[in-house]
Image 1 (cartoon, rainbow, N blue to C red):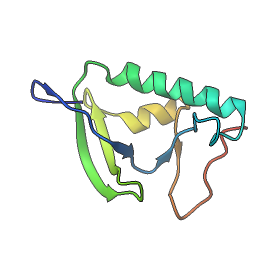
Image 2: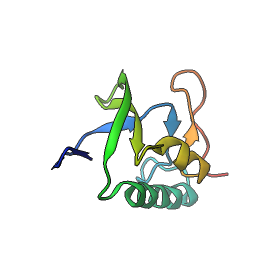
Image 3: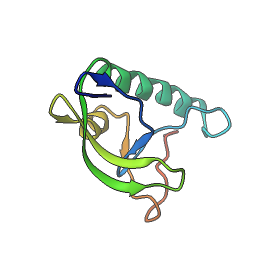
Image 4: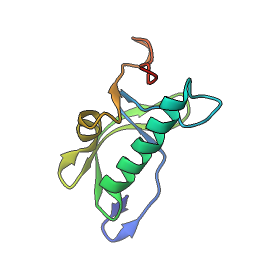
Amino acid sequence: MSIGSTAIAAIFRLHGVDAPEGSPSRAKCNRERSRANDARYAVRTLTMGKKAIVKRSHGVDKYGRELVDLSVDGKDITITLIARGHLKRWRYGHEAKPDWCR
């Protein structure tokens, strides 16, 4: 992510979505781990060397990550990643976590 000409690292989570787990201890199946790798690659491809803008902050989750709506090149990255199957809509605390093994 960059601000002006300065690149910065930030710990955040995209708001209102779930991503597959990549950790062998957290993923429920091999398919979920594979999908996690695909999602990470997709995010890197969409963001590397580009200007990312936090359009809105929704506070902080229980792990201390800022919950954000993120735009890259004027496009909402969450919508793009959902459309490509890398993320699923999810309302934490209001519904069950999506099943990535189906």
